[in-house]
Each structure stands twice: as C-alpha cells, then as structure tokens.
Amino acid sequence: MNLGVFTLLLAIIGGASGQYYDYDFALPIYGLSSPNCAPECNCPESYPSAMYCDELKLKSVPMVPPGIKYLYLRNNQIDHIDEKAFENVTDLQWLILDHNLLENSKIKGRIFSKLKQLKKLHINHNNLTESVGPLPKSLVDLQLTHNKIQKLGSFDGLVNLTFVHLQHNQLKEDAVSAAFKGLKSLEYLDLSYNQMAKLPSGLPASLLTLYLDNNKISNIPDEYFKRFNGLQYLRLSHNELADSGVPGNSFNVSSLLELDLSYNKLKNIPTVNENLENYYLEVNELEKFEVKSFCKILGPLSYSKIKHLRLDGNRLTHTSLPPEMYECLRVANEITVN
View: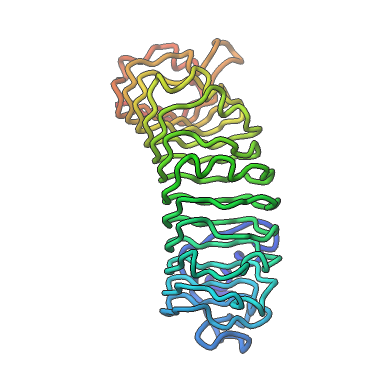
C-alpha cells in the first residue's frame, strides 16, 4: 500500500472511531476515480466514500452523488451554497470548505442541520461575519478560523460538540459570553487572535484546552479558572496582563499542565500549582524570582513538577536566581534565562 492511500485510510478510520486527523493540504490521490463521483472531482476507488474537489476553481458546489461521506472542497472560488446542494448525501460526515469566498447571506436555508450525521465542518479562510447555523446535534468538530466573524449564533443543543476553532476573527468578549453555555462535551476552544479586552463569561466547565492568546485582555477575574473541572492547557500570551490585573491565585489550578503568559507586562511571577509542567513567561518585565510562586514549602516530597520554564526576555539573570530554586524545580529539564 502506498503512503498516500495509507494516509487517507488513517483519516477515514479516525473519523469512524471518534479520533480526528486534520490535514490542511490536499492529499495525493493514486489510482482511478470511482464511477460514483462528480466528473470534475476525484473519488479513489479504494475509498469511494471520499470525494476530493480541491483546487478546481469551482464557483459552486458540484453534484454530490449518494454514498459520499467525506467531501473536500478546499481552495476554490465557491461563494454560495444552494439549499439543495447536499440533498443526495444527508449522511455526510465530513464537509471541508476551507479557502473559498463564502458569505453568510449566500448560505441558503438549513443546509447544515439536515446533515444528521455530520461530525466535522470546516469553513476556514472565507468571508463569514457570523457563525453558521443551525447545526446538527451530531457535530463534533467546528472550525471557522480566518474569517471576519463578529457575532456568534446559538450552539444550544450541540451535545457532541467537542472542538471549536475560532481564531483569527473579530470577536469581542460580549459576542462570546454565554454563546457556549450548556455545552457539556466541549473540551477544546481556540479564541486566539480576536479583539477581546476581557475574559468571556459562561464558558463550559468541561474545557480541557483554552487558547486566548493575541487579544487585549488586561484583567483576570478572581478565581475565574477555578470553575473549570479539568483545564490542562491555557494560553494567554500576547495580551496586556500586568500584576494589578492578576489576583494572587488566578493560575493556582491543580489540573493545569501548561500555562503560557509570555509577551505580557508582568513584573512578578504568578503563583502556580505544583502540578504545572510547562510555564512560559518570556518577554515580560520580571525583576525577581520568588520560589514561593512554585513551591509553598520545600521537602523530600514537596517540589514543583515543572519540566520547562522560560524566563528569557526579562530582567532576570542566572546570578539573580536564588539557590533554593534548584531544590524547588528539581525535575526541570530546561530553564531558559537571559
């Protein structure tokens, strides 16, 4: 079996098992196309349920024959979707529309909600100004990055929605607050590269990964992150955080494994839990290293689990680090200082 076909096999098996392998490039297709395929597209004979219509300068969605479950329409000039575009494939599972010219006003009717088995919907790099919908309850993975989105519709009832990518849009905190309320399966939310000045309220407690980097956030409400049951990965780099806007125990969350606060205006190291493994603080205004930010007490069984710590781009030097730091950070693999 050649590599291109094996890669496609992984993608399809992953979709069936609930694991998703994303590819932002057109997969190489080998062999003849299945006869059950739009004439301008390619449906590999080995996997006839996948139809590739990438980079064909299409201006509309081609005829999609029954039996297609994985539809790729990337890098075209599609600027509208008719209400009957997918009437032959109501069991479609993946719909990938990245790099087109779609606008909300030209997506007709309830075309997505009719796809009762749709798990993955990607409309990255288009001209959307608000999120699309209504969406089917089956949806697991929604990607709407690199658009011009300023408004989010309701995601109410999307009980399976697990991954949401909304980076590189024009969202402010009021548009985000409460939009995801009640989504008990949501684990991954990327809101980086937007226009939020505050942390949005009403985010689901189920989140494991939350990316908020490259916004304009200057303040952390007291105990904001304590409400998340198992938050593990948090990015707040490239914001406007200063000591005055960060309460003492903002990031002392026992489930947190990775925290990125780089490129802010912090002068003191925010206190973190001993379970944190990766801590990024480069390019702030740090002036001193406080061991108590990492270890409340020191002892044979009391130490920080930090593996990687970045302190470069601050006012700290190796000579300014206290000797007890090494006892606290005894399992660290890398500590980067100027």
